[in-house]
Image (tube, rainbow, N blue to C red; front, side):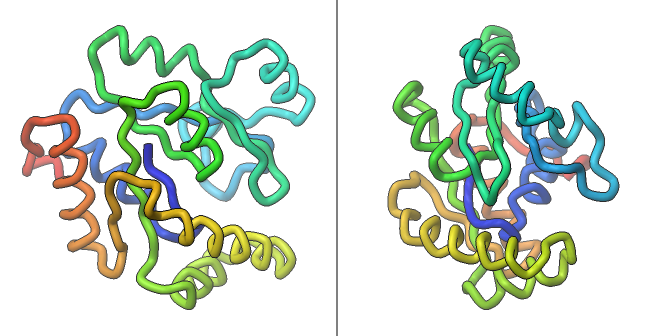
Length: 187
């Protein structure tokens, strides 16, 4: 599981790991938030209406789910189980509450916390995205404070202070968990 505040660079680091570690699978999360520019339904997220998401909750279709900054996010259990049956390691990109829920169900799961080097840098990255209004930005910053306070619950931490070092740290962490060697040509 990879978790951490918005703007920490989780998605970028995960994409790099998927390109470098053969056989690693990514679990596409479901969400009720609107797609950002360039995001593709079924690839970046499964974009669901709130009603559809709530129906999935009632049907028990999520490994975990949580509300984050006014939107619902969840990990569809069926695809994760399919990857595991295939013998693949699976990356989940989830928020803190969801990571805690998965840890209860799967105590063998490893948790990686990704963060920017400071809260000031987190704010700068979120502002730079230009995807949030000021109210949403403040909600994300409040959430970031509580997430950083919980980082000791995680097995590993990657501080994303610079692209290359963060990429190397993430790859080394994942390879230490799943074993194997990164494909330097694809990385």
